[in-house]
Length: 192
Image 1 (tube, rainbow, N blue to C red):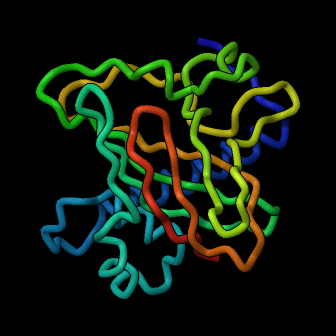
Image 2 (cartoon, rainbow, N blue to C red):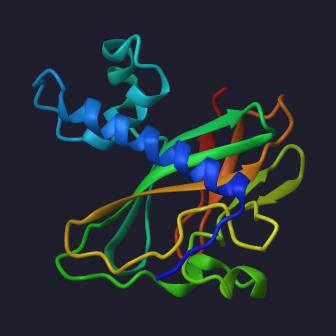
């Protein structure tokens, strides 16, 4: 499979890949606390490695857990406002069923520009109820969504780290509703 990105999208993907790699490495070298949720700890550790013990207690609970079709479970682990004027939502997509799950095509949304770029989480939105605005996944200059793409089938119990980038709501907005086709809506807090 060949995926092409613009320089800006490539830098973002490299940064996310490096951060995820460091986070997994830190989680794998943990203090043996018996915590069986390394992804949640990894998310906290990549945000601020200087105080992992204080962060670990806060990161045990995801911001939201959404149960979708085919036994899929989406755990939203963070929603962070970045200086560049966007919000990055991170999480884990897990097959919580006892059999292989095919990722539904409707997760890509129904916009032709996004669909033509393959399977993704391009159908995700953030809704600011107070500001009465809906924010769609950002796209690069070639129309590719700035989100996890090329979603595979997931074996029973398998999980996949995912991300989505959105335009940032106003700084006064700290709570939004996260929506993904086929999953229930969930209220999440934006940090940063």
